[in-house]
Image 1: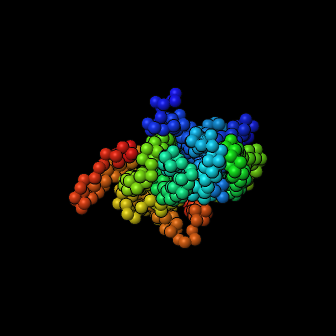
Image 2: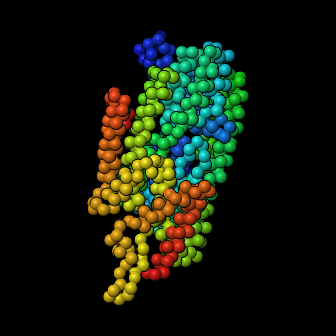
Image 3: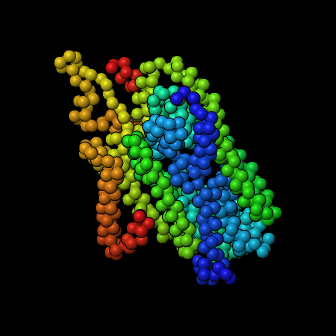
Length: 265
Length: 277
């Protein structure tokens, strides 16, 4: 494929808007680089590229999240554009990742802009509340969806509509050795996602479990990631049972574990 | 009252239908109006509005006051917000805005910080380490249906948990926070163990850093990668992750800088590999 059909551009523009609303609400998955890559791949008729770009970007961004309203790179838009450009150039998914990462970082500024714009609606609501106009308070909150979605939809539309020419031009001049380098970089980028999660979880405290996971996956032929996560679950249950025994021994009373199991499920 | 049997508490005006309204607004609309000034403040007021209208609808002064109070600064983890809103509803109903203003403001500002900490750990960090890491792995493996189904199913389960949270909090009122804290701490620990096991496994499977260097020549040539594999398979991916982990511990290191470091490193090794082969 060497051009993106206009209808596909419109669809992906709508998708990024819905994906952004998913990001700020239920986070069912549409917001994730993973889904964005898959959907873009499906729309443009190259699912495997979509899976590879989406999957790799997802791993890279596992630990990148908006805690407390911080702005992070927009890998949702990045994943859509990266996948699309990888497909139209035919340069492979690594090319898509190499484009998605800088695109995502560039679009960070628009996230800040959107969150700033919403201050207008907060003030609108404050005035409405003083007049007792509840309906207007509600509309103010709903109007906030406009900056959230437009700050994603406009760049994706513009990027897919005009970016095509630019990317195809880059594609013509990019040397073979650099593509080899980008391909390799695409393979090691997930390391950051892992490292970020290790920073956020009690890595040092639970180091033995990390080692076990690594060794089982690396050495046991035929084991799947779901298999390893079940091993992890078993280890966690053992750990909890032992903790309960310890606290029972020290406090001289057995804790009520029923409630915990309920929530855990 | 016609809807009397639907009420959640026996002597309450609030029906299940009202709770559904609040819940839908909570899961979808809490952050629509997110802004740098009051963050989720606007959203919170929007979420609780059906209750404010129900309780103060025939008293404009009270409604105005309640809206102004609820528009104040608020920011917490979204799944945990259900607990705060449930408690808030209970306060509005039992004490009311006139006497309960301080209690309501205190509840929101007192719980949002600690709940944000717990919630971000459970519902973002650990959730992603488990659900989205496995989904990404499956995607790289070419399994499109499970890669999408697993996050969707887990996401729906979280929505179910949030529905329970809302009632739990409404039911128990402000007693809730202390008891829940210690339980969530233990769940967090157990989930962290599963999460770290999975991350360890991912390091061994999704980080790709092969080495194309061949040592010696002719009959005695052997590949460096094969030699490394005999010592410890996936050694280089592990070293790269540990390097990233170490770099992230540096004061001025940001994720953006780390991405650039990894890109340069990757392009460097990749070009070197390409040149050798």
